[in-house]
Image 1: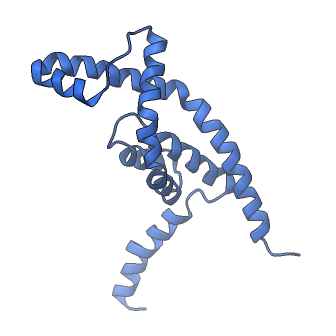
Image 2 (image 1 turned 90 degrees about the horizontal axis):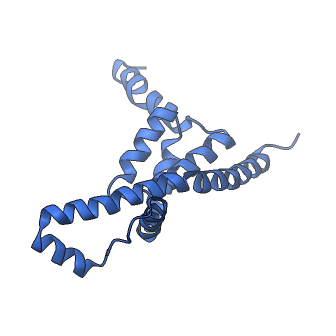
Length: 160
């Protein structure tokens, strides 16, 4: 093989192949799917991709599964922001924040500092609700995905 071919194999193909094959056991794929779904529904918009990348890197999870779940489950993030905020408010016995768009526009127009404080607290309540909900999201999804991937492995194995 040529020098260029050797270099491409060592620097591009081999690392890419290793990354794609990382964590491809049924348990590894299930964990990547469960963690990816949990991180995807973070109550902060724009953070899911970075969180999935960091989790994949730190926990050595399969990035393909993480980012695929991240993309397809993104609508869930919008649906779950308010429930996470309300859960956090209940846990801290805080008054419910008025999260209507009109009220937010008026609040930021009148006093931006107070609005950042008020809606920052709502964000912290959402973060608390998200963290408390973690085991209730990750564990059932892990068990479901693990069963699916184990069955898939059995079906794909050649017969003796």
